[in-house]
Length: 262
Image (tube, rainbow, N blue to C red; front, top):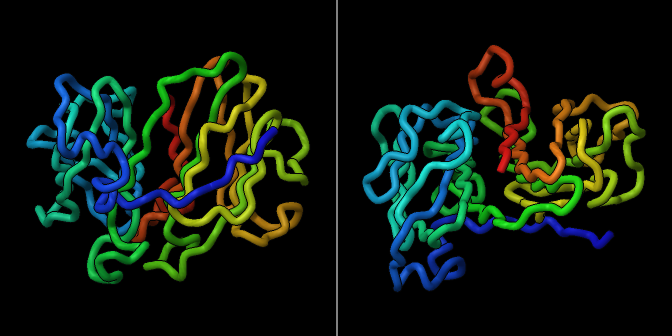
């Protein structure tokens, strides 16, 4: 099948000029569906609102709001405001939404002064348009690399890529480079890279492994190894997030995945 290339996601501060441009100048009546994922490892619990209406309150690291499906927010222009537990503003900028569409917003990067504004690793939400289409057979899986570092439990080192393997449980790990069909193998996925929706030809249980780029999967210990079940005719997004700085208990003290059914 055709290769689906990973591309870096554009920070929301720049989206007003390149995504949903018509929304910025022409508000549309109605509502959109939206959910928010907390994947910023140094940020405390987050309060999130858009145009004054709450999207999340005291949202813990690695959590999703709403926990199932989506919430609603007015279509058209709207300001997304993200504050931490102390009340400090982490993000305050316009996020346009289209009527009757769905969007997943993922907060990534490192809060605080460790990285200057504009750095790829500073705190920033990124927006993902969730497709309205559905698979005709099997399932679709989209992958988001939201881990600004692969370091286990520190303030972070230089951003590192990852190698991702997704294959039917009990089957051999792919050694070639399929990016759709029976298995997925993605080499050197960069921080903030997102795949398209990758078609998996059959439903069922899949093994998911993530390694530091360049590690030999036959001998290295994966950053995470787990399984996900793909229901027939379903679609989902998997967000890879790093360990929460300071966490001492599982699962937040290790690299992990957040599964978002759509």
